[in-house]
Length: 159
Image (cartoon, rainbow, N blue to C red):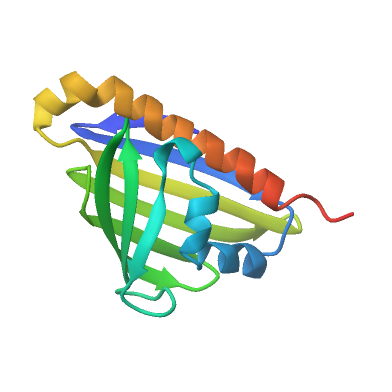
């Protein structure tokens, strides 16, 4: 996992190989309720609703979570949906001034290479970066580290 900055925007890049076929891994990520399974419990993350029965381009997803005890609503839109290959979710309403998350999936060595690229910007410009920047960077890194561990547990090598 690598976290960098491009001006006032943070960029998190993470990748993980899992020993399962792309179709199986992508199917897991195509079900919004599984996001609850791979998100740390301290966030109290819950999917509250979706605008379509299944995720597709244009789907709106509403979540509820707690950030350091503060309840927060979050709405994302699936901006791009290419089954078995990639999808992009963007925040429409929530804790960030910008949240743009690209998920990619590729067959590699009999399994799947998953890559995440998240561009995010804090609200309140320089003040937001000063007051919350280190805390948010730490939280986002912890969330993705947790996610990686859970995914490894969910997709162990087949015996």
